[in-house]
Image (cartoon, rainbow over all chains, first blue to last red; front, side, top):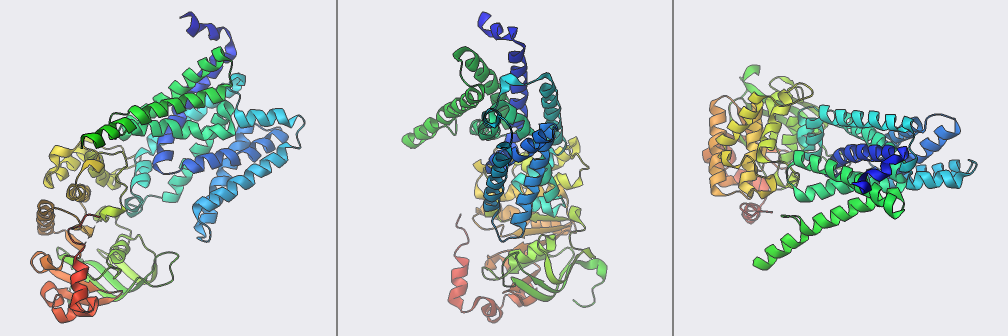
Length: 281
Length: 258
């Protein structure tokens, strides 16, 4: 018990844990749609291309969340705009847009005094440094992400599973896709705080893929992904406190370990279960 | 054919040319196609003849190069409630984590106002549709764990749950068992008796005379259309399929699950 409550004597740890749990929740739920729609690469790309928006906002003295959100929307529009011309494939368009935007971010950040420290925070996250204001923003973002998913749940399922039916019944596919990209940008912006540009895609992808290994039911998958996201944050933060290692890395690595366990031992889709099936046959 | 009033025509197609985005050649052109209400219509023709293309045009999934498609007298795409489309089985992502009942329930989405949360009646209609196709005992099964025939039946259940007046089936008989084929034909008959119009793209020429009222033979254009027995004459079929050997080869995929 002592071990569990000891870190709470530091307010920054309590804040970090709270933010980590909310991020695990929102990224876990949203990640299910990211994975099912085959958008894992887009998640990573958005995380990188948000950088110039954050730096520009920082330079102009605006809230970095606003800058990042705008950059996320611009990226989403650019990717769909370029790939809609049908001269460039979508994955190529993503590759070009996000590297270009990231490079712009690096150029901008090199104009900032003491930029190496700021860059390090953006790249690797600094969840132990979240301010009370940041906590408020993360609460808001989590509420927005979860509400949008709840309100457009059936639409998101349909455009992910059967885009032909979705178009046939008159759903606005581009509008829904953009909506998904917008909440994805929001979730990524908050995730950047915790684990940084490079690892944020893991918060979206790893819990959802782990959950998928354990169930064939979407509602169960969503709950499991949320659970794995929160669990990774919880265990990762304690590990980082007691072992004195980087918090972002510890959170992501915990998620990775859970994935490996599920990959090996999942009852139906696990490596060992499938191996056993082959041997029995 | 020429004296039908507007009310009796389910689908009316005039002078269309269809092309898939980013492909140079026209996939299908047709001067005039009319499909009457309450009929069972077979779309036949070799691979690439434009059967799926025509179905997609009737749902409004393909932009028209020129011409008009109207469904129940309205421009294509304006009556989403009334048109149900069952895709080819190989176009579906069967690994998606949904159950049989979830899939049938999607047929109700078009009727629901945002945020489209299904009501009790929607669940009942979806379940009844699964009962009708003999899948009531499989409601909580993941769709990947069903056989090919069962998968086809669940998609038909989704269309039934939608309660559409025009049902479009794209190659429903490929890779299905005899039970499923019998169920599909039975459902098609029942629906047509209720006034529903059913259009089926099929490779299976053997069953057409018995099971369909009319046939449309395609090969990038309309080769022939009319009562099934008039269209399925060997001399007319040869125009679409080439020599009889090609016709034989065309039919071999039937029954093979790919």
